[in-house]
Length: 111
Image 1: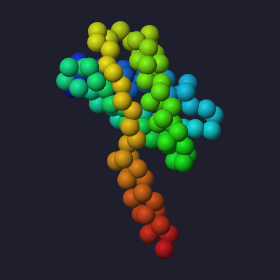
Image 2: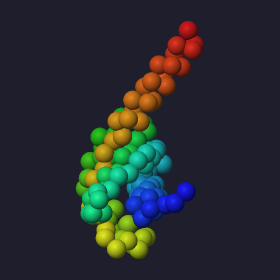
Image 3: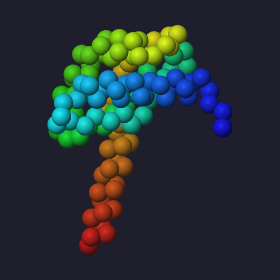
């Protein structure tokens, strides 16, 4: 299987962004990078995250919105990308839906 440049960039970004989020999260938070997408020109990157506990989601997103510049600097230091993207962080709605389906399925098995 051949990896394209885009695959390598996405893999690198996912790891580096996860490292940044690990440093940002306190001991009571779990922030997971579930997916990452990048524009064709590598200028814009969207990071999809899940947050546990779920009640902290809004606060985490607000904090990450303020820290976008720090995230970009962190990526700059830890990678050798030609073009450094601008980041946007969003909650992964697909992952939330999957978790709800799993919970419903578990409840049906118990009954």
